[in-house]
Structure formats: C-alpha cells, structure tokens
Length: 574
Image (cartoon, rainbow, N blue to C red; front, side):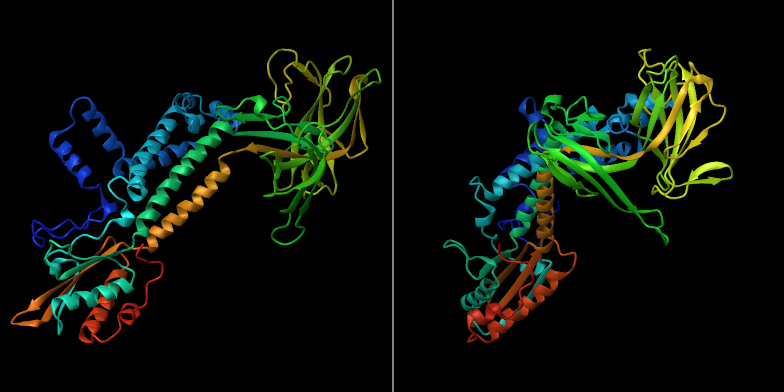
C-alpha cells in the first residue's frame, strides 16, 4: 500500500507525517520495522518476527492468492478422482506415460492435495495476521481507536500539498480560521484545532473514515469465506443415486451409488431420510430452432425425514431441490430404463425388471445398456442393447429422431456363457464381459413394447414389456454454504463501501497580511488517499469557493455556509 505524504522539502522537521492510518503500521510498529530492517533478523524470536512480517505482507498475500488460483486450474481441466473416477481411469488408459506423473503430483485430486492445502492455509494465516491486528486498531482500546483519532496538525507549508489555494481576506487570522471551521463542520468533517501550547491560526479536517471500515469488512468477510469452505470440506459430503420410477432408497452408505465424504464424515453421519420416485416427466420443444431441447423436468417423489415419519410429496425440478434435514437433493440427470422379462430353457422367469440405459446422445436420448441374467439355465445370458425413444431407420441403422418416447424400440444382441460375476473382479453394471461367452444371435434383433424374441438353441425367450424413466439425484450436505453466501454478500458490501468513500484531509492556515493585522492570507491545502476518478479535485475547488465566499461575507450564517454545497453521495465524516 502507498503512503501519501508531504514532500520532504515542504514540511518542517517538527511537522507530523500525513499518511493515512490504513496506509501502513502505526508509529511504534513502523519504528520496530525500521530497526528490524536495519539490523536484519536476529536469533530466536527475531527470526520468527521477521518470517511473520513477511507472511503477513501484502506482497505475500497477493502471491499466495495467485498460486491458489493457479493451483485450481488442474482441478478444472483434469478429471478428478472424487468426482468422476471412471474418467480418471480413462485418462490413465489414454496417457499411460503422463498420467502416473500427474497422479504423483496429486493433480487428479487437486483440492485434497497436500500442496493445495498448504497454499490455502498459508493464505488464511496471511489474511489473519494482516486483518485481525487492523481490526483491533479500528475497534479495540489498544493505542486508541481510529474512530476517535483526530486529524494531524496542519503542515507549515500548505502550498506544497497536491491541492492548494491562497487568497486574502478582510478578517483577522482567528476569525478567518473560525469561519473555515464552521464550513468544514457543516460538511461533517472531523476537526482539530491547535492545543494550548501550539501556535494558532490553523484547523485540520478529515473525512471518509468509513473507507477503512469497508476495507476491513471486505477482508474479514474473505476470511469468513475461507472458513466456510473449510467447514464444508470437513463436515460436508456429496453422493449420487440413480433411481427408477417406483423404486425407493434410503440415505445410507450401501444404498448410494457414489459417496464422497468430507474429512471428518463417516457413514453414520448421513441424514436418515427415505425417498421414493413416483413419477418423472419431461417436456421438449417440438418446433423451431430449439426443437428437441428440454423445456421442463419434474420428478415427483414422496419422502420421509426419518424412519417411521409421515411421507410427504414433493416435486424436484431443476434449481428447485428437495431440502430435508439440512440435506439438499438435486435433479441432475434422467434417462430411460427398458423393462425386460426373460424366461430360460426350463420355462422359468429368471429376469423381470427395468434396466437403466445410459444416454449416448443427449440430444435424442439414444441410450446404451446391458442386461445380465445370472439365474438362467443351462447357461447364463447377457444382452447388449440400444434403446431409442423415437425409433427411425437411417441407412439401415436404428436411430432416434426425438428425445420423447413417441416410438420406443430396443435393439439387442444376445450372448450365452459365463458372465464372470463370480471371478472376484469388479464389473460395471453398464458393461458386459463377453470373454467367456458365445454370441447366440448373428445380428441384433429389434423389439417394440410387448414383443418377444425366442432365443436360438432352446435357451428361452426375452420380452420387451415397456419402459420406465430414471433420474440421477445428487445428495449434498454443505454446512458452509449459507455462511459462505453471507460472507460473500458482506465482502461485496465492504468492497462497495471502500470504493464509494474516499479518505481525504483538508487544512486551513491563516496568517496576518503584511502591514495590516486586520487582514489575513488564508491558505487551503488538501490531499486524498486515492483520487483516480478526479472527484476530490472538484470537491476541493468547490470547498475553496465556499470558504472564500464565507470569508468575504462574514455575516452569512455558519449553518448556511456549511450546507451551501452539495454533499457527495456515500461520503460522511465517519
């Protein structure tokens, strides 16, 4: 931060510095810093104080903030283990030489990597060490509060300040200073007059103390955001669940498809709610440039907040999550689940359920999936299928023309043999291992709702009975979300306050005119902490005009003198 001071050749040795309090340390700290800078870090506590001063400097804070932003880039570009483990595995398969090095650096789990946590903690410590002492200096009793700190004494040579003006008035110095003080007081400046042992003929005025309050509010709120994010990372969790119409699930560790807990979260910390998907409906635009694009989603559910509690209905829509027991359930995806009935060679129904298919084309909802029939006799059966909600044939290939189910159909390719489910190797429910199986259909066969296909070799038959819809739900608990929102709003308020309010000072000094003790020469000087927009120059010019008018017409009431100028918006003596 930059100090605004009187030029060295403009101020006498006994004049006080004109730096604003928020521009640097107070006099005692500045003296200690100068001693340390001259002597260098000493043994013991000297080294600690030197390191702490370096950590809490503005330069270090900016460097750490840049490193935090730079470290977040891999988390946005590379797949993350906590969000999409399958994508991470695919990256390893596609880049077998590069991926191990990236994994060694923790770039596939960026926000949980030790180096990212180190940057985060150092930035937090830097902000704490910078903001907390300034806060105590603002509101605490130590060394006096900034709110009650008077302006500095007027410099001896006001003509060397960034803004200055001089003029002669037909008043003695004491009356000229009193008239100027009345004008400044009416504009809500904080004033300082000479003490009993000081030479008279001057008045100091200062305004814009709320700028420091806004600055500190912004930094304290930024600390609050960091703390809120840390609370969410420690005590929050995220989970995913795919559920088909008519199915029910409980918020337990075994019922969830994916579970990403915080550092201090276990399965026993999950909210004990239960949810049933009763119906899902989706609407799509049927004409125009947006044809086929979704217009609305609606997942109708019934939920109970705890075992034995009364079930309540709720419609989950996009950006309208279900909030139960501080846990939010979002609708993040949907698709189709064809229903199949499989009868084996003995005539026994060995499979009768809806199987979720995953959209391969989100524009038309052409979806891929597999059906695994473990209990079929004499051999296990497996089918690789494609479901189309609005089936059309394009060049002899089945395709979907629209995402809504206007002409649903499914194309299947059958296999028989060992599914490999008992081999001990984990398998995806959306992939079929055909290494130990034999293809029993030379080409895919097409089924529409209600149609059946008899499997070759007397292995039974499969019937496409219809379809249901499924939804993908995100179950999230983030105790730091609301505090982060509040702190973000406070940070914005503090930032606006620090931008709207300018800290500035005005000094008036009157001396007797040469050869005439009843007249005075008045010099007005002013400086502002920042004046990038040029607003203080206009304010200073207007103030000088008012002071000059008051000095030329002493009969003008002081209240009228002080309020004759228009007060800038958002600025006050505080």
